[in-house]
Image 1 (spheres, rainbow, N blue to C red):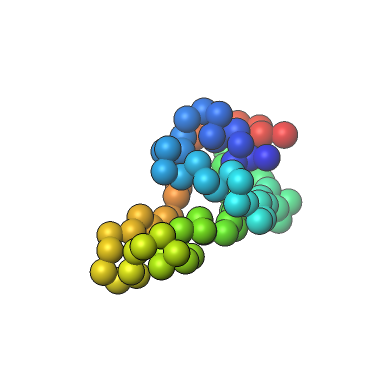
Image 2 (image 1 turned 135 degrees about the vertical axis):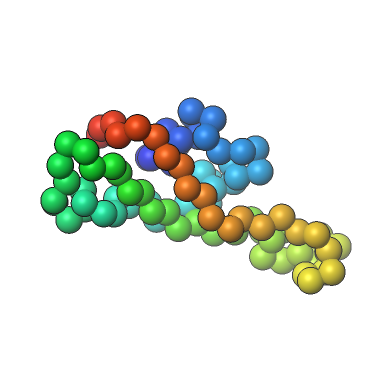
Length: 86
């Protein structure tokens, strides 16, 4: 739900668009989740996703982990001005 909003706003690079189809869990964290948000609070959204098939099994694509330059997703932090998302 939130991830799709960020994708529509072009916040994800072309290489990261796989996240939308591989998203396992997406939830709100922080002050909104704990019920202590105020008017200056931001939204903290955490997501868990499955890696791409070619990253999980590079040998099936003719690549060798540790020898070939494989793309890696490390961490994505998206910041926007506070706005109600729901």
